[in-house]
Image 1: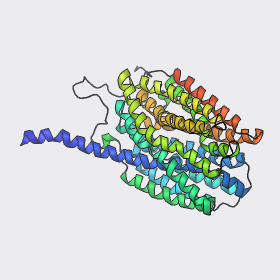
Image 2: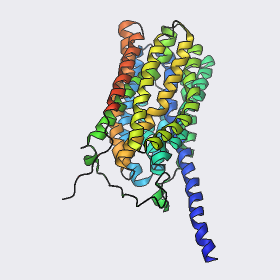
Image 3: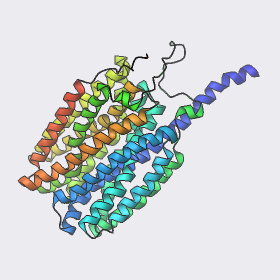
Image 4: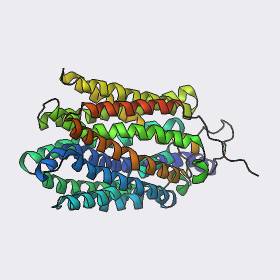
Length: 433
């Protein structure tokens, strides 16, 4: 009886770990769905908002840029919060603030009100979601198990792009942008409330081990060094990751927020046609997120070195962004180029954001990753999205075409690939006296 009980315990522990791990992935999926829902719907709402309120593209885009700056500061504090208390507080704060971001902005009557309400509430709400979702998955899944599970969680992003973009487009056929935002407020409130309720603490809290560790009998596990934030930022690895992520975010946010306007202005598609084409990124992403997650983990397994595998993929991803921008510029010749560009953007998207977090986790471990990645996110998201979004609108206002904006994004993706090439494969902890 005692022997049978002892034999059953590990299996019961694994079953419990799998169940909790799946809930972590599901809550991260909902958080990512809401986070990227903000990005996807802004691209669709940009034109109607600008026309209804009489603002320029740059003026309207500035609201999103400021929102991302608040997002970046909030992300830093969310990293400290989740290292100490887990993701539940972050998701619940995000539920309230993100829903208010849509709802209160829908009531704005002046440009100043729009800037303050959207930047503050949407920034705090979405800022609670990125670091919490990526780090929560990374704390439960490491090594060759990480990218596969993150790919499943990140599927929330393309699903949001498809479902919410098409939903907003449908609302705009009979109503205005204010009505669309009210409905979006309800969606994010419900989704993030559920995410908060099912979220879980790190595996150590339940006396469990993360998935992806070497199997028992493979040799003694090397104890993790507990990095202090200052120590981590005294190594080039985190700055290299920041540079690669920052430059890719400049290109990515420029494309995401301006591409619908590019298709309506330069390619002369209707808003409905442009939105349908934009949704292609999401449709492709639903497939590329899980598939490329598996591919990334197989690359790690083949190279037998997680940091090296993540580095290889961080070179490949922005290279796909460069090629996608080239195809995007060819869209006026054939809409097929636009479709191919969307598919390649989905490939890039499936790798880069989670891949950088995976690289940082491979270098610095799990125990204080929230603080480290929170500060890195503060730097990246405080600069990259704001610059990309603003430059996309500014170059259009300056030249009357989005072609120069896309070329700007192309150069940003190229710089990201170059930065990834110089990423180190380890960061040595400080020597003890």
